[in-house]
Image 1 (cartoon, one colour):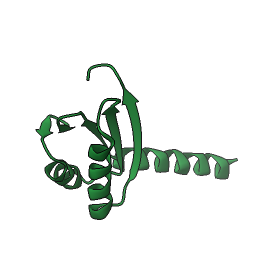
Image 2: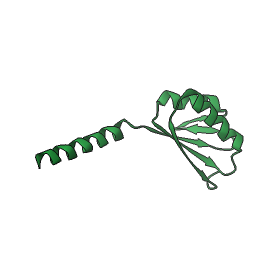
Image 3: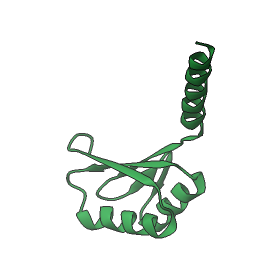
Length: 96
């Protein structure tokens, strides 16, 4: 019985550590600019620089449906070349 409690405590601790160490960065790609946190950029390269500087374990890309696909691809290509990280993406038509 004590073995089971120790095992449960170990996995709970591991889950807490992995959650504490994971860092998610939100990137918003609008038709005319890239937004990383509170910083705004006209082109992809400085936005990618900002993401790389934050050293995230995951990047969530949020884009407007009116954003040209080339803007999204440019950011994604530059980020892939600089840092391998998990990425998720969502689209919206509101607030664009």
